[in-house]
Image (tube, rainbow, N blue to C red):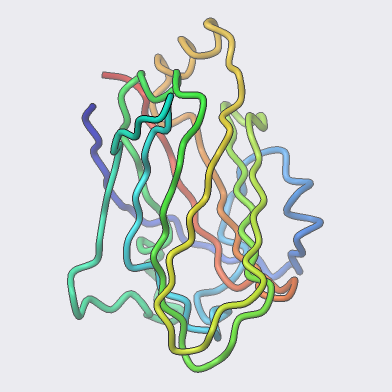
Length: 195
């Protein structure tokens, strides 16, 4: 399995109020980021991320990335949003896995984080394919944490899988992060499942 990751910028910030309820109504990828970088008053910083396939008492590492020690990602409202947009190049076999596990390591600043909620919406050609919604009830201030999530992947028809494989970067996602119902972070991604 080969994974290639690249980042590029997608600027623009919407001023609309985004709630978890409105995020769950999204039916297509957003055209812009729905909150400024300054909304992250909790100084939540993602420092490592791992994706693995979980099949029949066996685990396979699919992707792993970790920030270099001392690398700071906490820039506030720079015109370059490249830290919030990523492109993943997976092989086609990832579409066959029934269960995917992720591990997100993150740090938090001086404020406690109540009801840290991630809503992740995945779209293909502008239509919703899958949606995930996870909540951590409380995160201590000035802490390093690991958030383990298990995803039951949706059943895709062989025809849809072939369309996705033949359509690089047309699978997109919005990951929206809320604290006590307030949007504090928004990341976007595009996916390529071809060889």
